[in-house]
Length: 119
Image 1: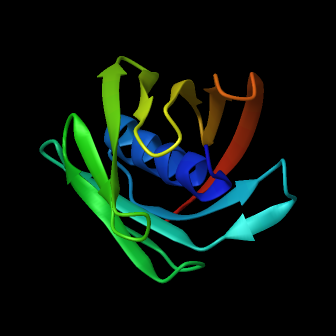
Image 2 (image 1 turned 135 degrees about the horizontal axis):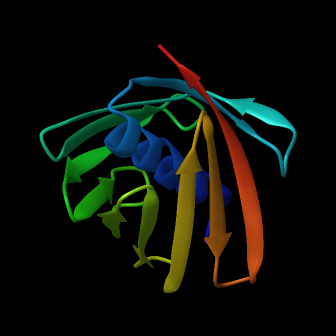
């Protein structure tokens, strides 16, 4: 899946599980700070990807990425998240702990780590 899709999922997962507002992410794979914000309330998510200047969000279990014009499913079980990116046709799994999200993308078969900046 696209790197920006993984980052969007990481932000959404953290917002849903922690209940905190996400103000940005640090992507360890690229070594970059990403301008992504997300806030979850009562099963609804509002997010903004400042690097692409697009909104994302929706109600569980589906999130819509307005930039790619596609849906990503997200299923939350405790501190674990799993789902499917319809654009790439790849499944993923993620784990949220402290201010970090580790995401496994089944497409390339690789782990990706994101540090979360909270508002």
